Image (cartoon, rainbow, N blue to C red; front, side, top):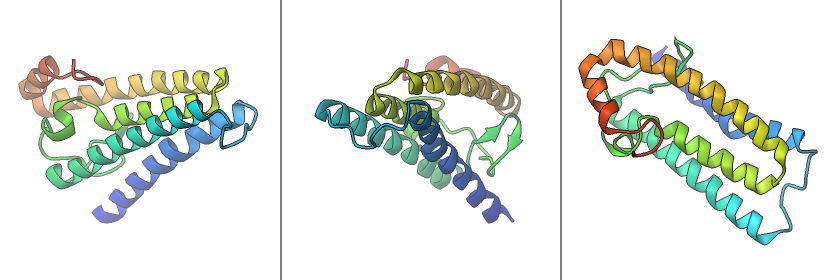
Length: 162
């Protein structure tokens, strides 16, 4: 059962963050060509998107390898098995939410790739939803890890190292 829940959690995250949100961005921007003719937009968008995916995948793999789980909760509901200890090393020494930071970088790349204002609106809505989600998750982490989490918050930024 645990493995099935893990697979579901990872698939849900992949479909939502890597597929559905960029698809919505593409739709609202008028279904532009998937490969822009502007070389600069193509290159910058692609580099950001790949870098963001690499950050997210590093975070997921590290969490699975070192933490034997995944921190992902969906507004208080466990989507994948939670880790049993607070992760503060690897990518988590740079950010308390490196998976989400990677997703933000990825979606910034998608916005650059499409180079229209409509995907930016979708991105801003996504950021607002994720900020609410992160605050919910932080409450759970404070309850689960207490002062250890508070000390981690003091030395590590929510999304950036500062």
